[in-house]
Image (cartoon, rainbow, N blue to C red; front, side):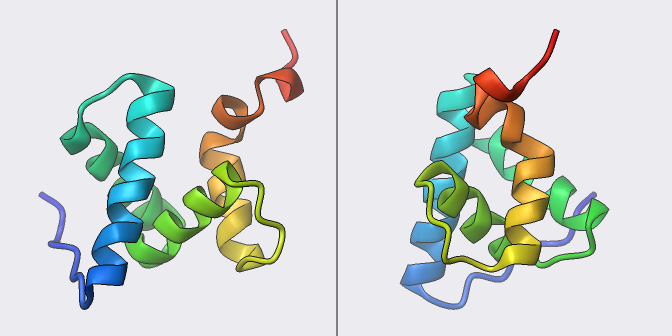
Length: 89
């Protein structure tokens, strides 16, 4: 079982909720599944879940001024969902 994600502020909670919303929209999954996907990705890349969540939102918003390391993780994990034209068959 995964460790609880510590949300220290309303801003962090909103960021996590927005990232979950991105995944719900892209994957058509539940909020819980989206949460676990973010936490699992954070464990795989040894990065805090909120950092991954912020990067996912930044990539979805096409924000190029974000944490480059975390954005690389978000693009690796979800890039094909966010930019379907970049996927080759």
